[in-house]
Each structure stands twice: as C-alpha cells, then as structure tokens.
Length: 292
Ligand SMILES: [Zn+2]
Picture 1 (cartoon, rainbow, N blue to C red):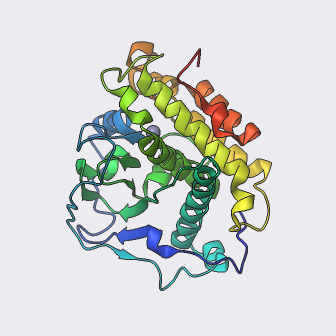
Picture 2 (cartoon, rainbow, N blue to C red):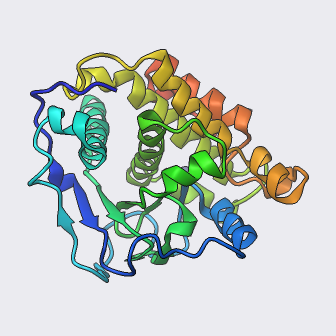
C-alpha cells in the first residue's frame, strides 16, 4: 500500500478517543479467553443493530471521553506511509471518496461517517463497547469503532497474515455497513439474525464484497500511487478467511454449526470479497437474491 506522497489527507474523518481510560497493556487476557472469543464471535466485524433506531438520523452523542483528531500529524500521503494512525486516515479517506463518487454517479448523496479510534472501551449510541467485540459499525451514531490492538489479535489468535491491507479490508467492510445503512439494506436483517442463509450472513457477505469493490477502485481516489498488489489482496483474503464462522466455530467449539452462522464461512467471505474486487461493481454484490 503506497500512498501518493503529495495527496492531502482529511484527518477530521478519524477521531482519536484513545488513552482516556486505563493504561494501555492493562487488559486482562488470561483466564477468560474462551469468553472473550465468544464475544468476538458475536460481533466480529459486525454491526450492532440492537441499539438506537437502526437507519436514519444519528442519535445523541454519548461521549465518555473527548475525541480529538489527528490533523496535526496526518496531513499528506507521505504521513500515511510513515505512521499507522495516518495510514488509517488515508484508508478512511480513500474509502469515503470512492463511495461519494459512486453515490453521485447514481444520483444519490453519500453522507460521510467518522471512524473513532478507542482503546479498551468506549461509549457509543449503540451502548457500551469494549475492545473484545472487535471492530464494528454503530448505525445509530453512524460511526465505525476501531481499537487498533484488535489487529494483533487477528494475527495471533485468528491466524491471519496481518499487514496494512488486512486493516484496510476490515475498515472497508465496516464502511460497507455504513453504505448499507444509508441504502436502508440493514432493515432486512431484523428477525433473521443467524443461520447459513440468514439475512445477517447476506448483509455481512455484502459488506465483504463492498470492501473488495473499494479495493479495486482505490487507485482512482487520488490517495494512492499505484493499484494494490496481489500481496496486498492476499492480506485481505487471509483476514477474511480467518474470521469465517466455520473456522472460528471449529476452533472454539470443535464443530461447525451452520444454524448459528452470522457472517458466513471462510470460503464465502473470500469469494464475496473477490467478487467485489474482480468486478469493481457494487451491483455485483447482490447477496440478497439467490444463493450465496
Ligand atoms: Zn460486519
């Protein structure tokens, strides 16, 4: 992932709410590992539709800590090449620039959503959240919530390759949920929240596909110097496969239980990201009709 050195970053799209609570490194991970994994399974890359009113206007702000932004240090593509924080800003900018154009091309208006970086725990319009739930999108306040330490876990506990593009895939997936929120797609999930062919799984696979669509079109957003490489894409696919329902269930409970699927299998997540990436067309991400 190579940013155009002169590209201007818009750091106002990323809020920094880290460091407001306990000292970093204080998270207890011994003993309760199984419970923690269970929680991650519930919400990993997910969307919390239990809080707030689903789509529509953002809910009231419930800020536990004041959120700053990264505008002092993240100004250009060169900054994004040098630091992880600024790289997140660059990825968020590119994703939203792509969707702004895509919506405009269809005569619609894209509403930007902020990403909030937090450590350990944060208050959201969807309720209190800890790092243990993994990255997620809250429709009620239209924010993506991200604790960057999750990405270490993705490598160490889930066996993904890791790397900058694994992060980009996860962020692209969460913004896929924001797009679904803007389009009203999220409403389809209520009452059909688990099972191999459930609306929940269809929603998640579509978000994977949208991440792939962005990856294909990212070079046209002006943020990057060159298109992503096959090695970049492999990082995304490795992350997508690592969090497949079947793989996680096998590891945590020793058997696969399709009736409990919420996100799709490793094979499906790989395939839908690839469908988006190869076509570059959101229209090809119709996971709601036909087989998935
Ligand atoms: Zn998701």
